[in-house]
Amino acid sequence: MIDDCTALVLAGGDSRRMGQDKAALILDGKTLLERVTAVMQQVFPKVIVSVRQLRSDVGVPQVCDAQAASGPLAGLIAGLAEADTSWVFAVACDMPFVTREIVLHLAALRGGYQAVVPVVGGHLQPLAAFYAAGARDAMRASLAAGDRSLRGALEKLDVRYVDEAELRDADPQLRSFFDLDTPQDLQAARER
Image (cartoon, rainbow, N blue to C red; front, side, top):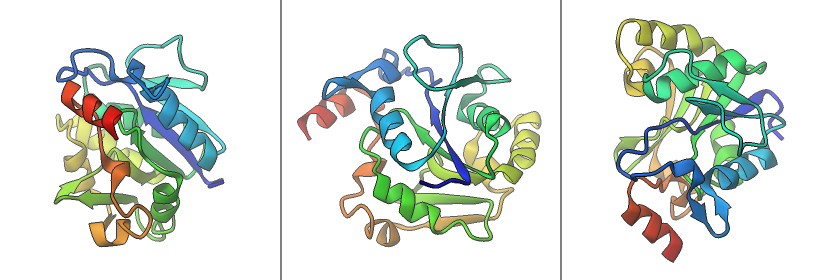
């Protein structure tokens, strides 16, 4: 267990490209939210789900975005405010293949940084990343200035970016970073 950290499962998105609530989608007999939450419970003593409005299908504490329609940055800020640990591991509920091994690998890289963010295919993965509680003020300032982008908030932090070569030590096929944005992604996940 990573005792100095709370897992924050982000489940408050619009799901526009999917056309339905991604958290409730079924994969191998479980909802995406159940799958990701179960993995986080193997690693962290406390798991929180960030939602836009409270859900009845969640078996762990929930936190609502303080600022509506402000995307994952608002969810992350709410989770950081709710957590009573020095770190939060934020993960999107639409990443059903995230593994315990990748989380532990990223956790080992936190020393001296405000965030640990994977980079896969040249793209930042801020929704499978560690954030120090002290990063909350910079994130709030970014949101207050009208920048709802997690990437914009990262520019204000001391970040340890983790490239694919390092990530493959824990997840050789980088399956942890496969996210489900469209019905085609869901079909591909079901075929895996």
